[in-house]
Length: 430
Ligand SMILES: [Zn+2]
Image 1 (cartoon, rainbow, N blue to C red):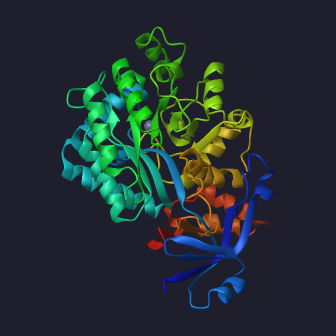
Image 2 (image 1 turned 30 degrees about the horizontal axis):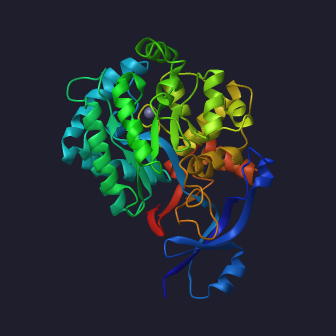
Image 3 (image 1 turned 120 degrees about the vertical axis):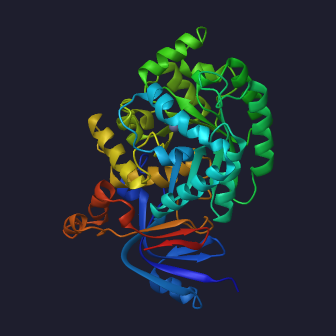
């Protein structure tokens, strides 16, 4: 018989979106979760599940919170080693720090080393799935997929395509971007828990021909995700306007080339025109909020409340290494702070939902990951709500679960991650 494991603690899951229903009512608390064969078999009371699964191994987590592993909807794993680089805005930051580092991924051994390091670091922070940009080198895609496959992890990734405004050694062509992306897609998409995302970096580093070629590839494989960047900084938008003089707006540079659709993921999406918001909502595309990146690079304040109210699909992400942390806890804290600067205090349930179910829905994977319910894949994080003396002394006087969770959201880091399960196997134990 397949090994069954019961984890007991404060099991947090969501029945509905806490942006559509009152946050406390959208969430549910149980006492135990059963894992079997890489999936969640049941969620319920500790006594009931012990009786129902009498042969299961029981792991008691006391007052720890057990919830779905974090889902990071927009990262650049090749930027792991240059995270927290000082003093630049987007274009200078790319030229000064990012492109020289991405150049190193021409070496498959280096790509493999960083891919493994990145997955180890993020697992230690409770992140079980991510959607990553790679570099222009196909070997950078092979590296992250091979590392994820060895860990039994659900990962989305794609070859970053750039055929202009990037240095020698970091440019492909419209044709080679199409050919390489297609070959990688055929090699990896749908294998084990891996999915391919067609990945033009952003309009300034692609010619219209390249965007067109990638749009054609997406139309041949519409089940694939397509990830890119949109309206991150105002000077970037001016640059796009000069490069695409006939485009109605930034989004139109993608739309005109077949790169707008429901399976599209648009990172940042801060400075949106009304037409862009309308079109994104009409097609049901996903926006990805990257709050630590937006404050770190000085990009602007994402309109979470306004975009949610108009029915946009939104995920949450670190944007490593434009973001300043690998931690989705730190990322939730930054989302809270940006919300406050825009006049909306996001509820802890909304922040935790964004970092799990919200991001999973943005990736089109909401029925598989990002929540705990029977049939979901067994990717879990166990959070210690008293991981440091400073957090513990605040959590101890909490009146309810949300008050107990919020100090960990605001002040927690990898020390709060007591245990991580990936695909039903314990991947991290503190
Ligand atoms: Zn990014």
